[in-house]
Image (cartoon, rainbow over all chains, first blue to last red; front, side, top):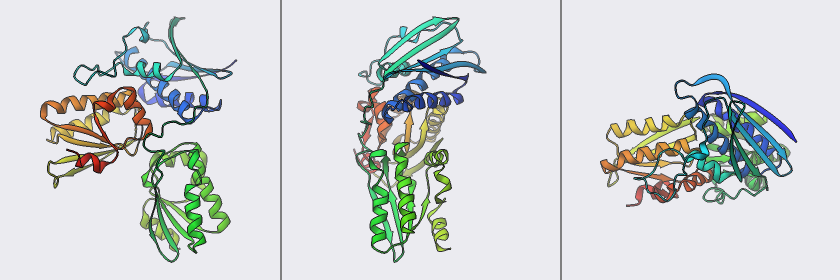
Length: 265
Length: 115
């Protein structure tokens, strides 16, 4: 059985690193984006509890939280351990989602989320540390979170001129809709247009699988010798592009005016 | 990364404040959301639409701030509505049962227009 671990300091700003570690552990065994997100959220809630409850007097920059994962067959086990005093979060009663706001506890939801997102949750005190052991069977459940966004990928053509077309995609993009944007650009290329400004500001989410949307767009543009500028890219999509190197192959602009200036050169 | 863009609508029947919340809300920054809403409430704004269309992630730390803001608004006769939550954020609202307590609308326009 393989095991890898990451240690982080006991401060809120460090938690995202542990979450990404868990998310990548899930993706690395072929999980869907939804399952990986569940692992991210569960580790976020677990580490947040440790930082909030574990060190009441002062938050510590020392490495006190360790997150380990083990992968065996379909099972992913995430172990979050910390060196604060004994605290069993599973001993607390669950909050009730059916209770209205008046009688509602404002805290206690984190551990409840973990129980709902994972298949099994256990607590042990061992070697002077608290261990929360989360286990999830990775079944490659398709991203079944289409409640609002994923079902709707409107691609609005804002304006089209003799050469230039401005396109504004919006909504949530994952691997299933990777061709939408390049198909739209191809239609306009067939109609004789050669310059495109893609206004990215309305794109609410791109999953790692959805990055293929941009890869396909770039490949088609290269084949057809069209010029494309991506404008007003939300910060989190820009981060995703930087991690994957896509920022290096695309022309990007902060504003539509700046994109027009790039194309007019 | 967490950003707010606030627009006050004064030409509607009842004045409303639209707060577009962009990015991610987790325990490292949830207090910023709480403080932003608190400062608006202290300025006398009590009817809010939180536009979540560009909010890609929220943990229970963010929900806590929503519940606190809602509780603060109730005795003032105020209101807190949510517009267009992304799928992930909707999941979290549903896990906590908040989708039945807070009013959630498909679009910002629906949230503003609804009585």
